[in-house]
Length: 138
Image 1: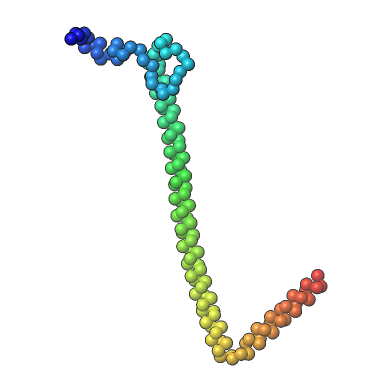
Image 2: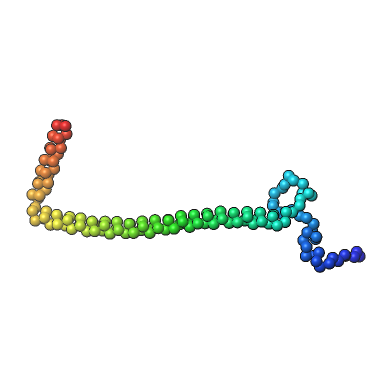
């Protein structure tokens, strides 16, 4: 059996003493020589933190933009709903007015007999006559 060498506890907590100098895992291959890599220490951590902050700011801006867009869509939907409701009320009122007018016209037609039809035909013929005369006199 081989004997294991025990290290003092202070060196067990130091990662570089345990594993040696290791470059940060980036998932990409590098054209530089990995054996000559020297960590930049605090500066490297600051660079990573700055990159994270920039990415976070970019994501925050995109989230703000999406929030503004969705708020705008919500406002537009509310305004459209109100406008459609008003249009529905106006069409209902107009339908009531037209139904009343049609009912009164039918009552008048029943009282007058067929004479009102001849008046309407006469008015249409006179109207067409004036249109034709106006058209040829231009």
